[in-house]
Image (cartoon, rainbow, N blue to C red; front, side):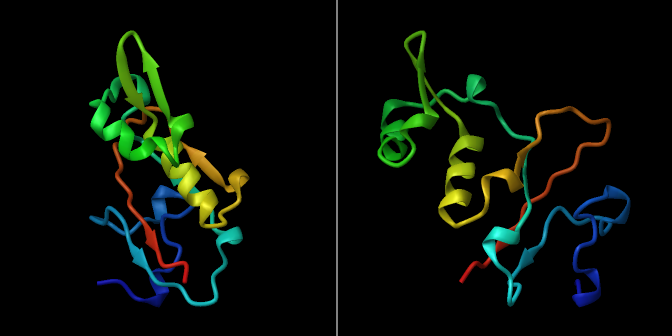
Length: 116
């Protein structure tokens, strides 16, 4: 269980993270999308994520720039889709970072923020 005093732990430095916690679900009041900083990843890259045409069609209307056709296969850029969704929720593009590096310690984070 977390409490208000845990707010921000691990956000900028993994040394301050909450042990045994992969992510937090936050419903922060008085928060603004333009102030949110987002890190995406690590995750499967588009060159490794080939999908059937039926799945690509589900995303092609809103995220056509994230559908890549190469060598007779269809690939999806999931980080690109997430980025476009965040921008659509008014998160500033310069505050969105995609992590592509490999680290010795594998960390998984998932954050859901209520933007209502």
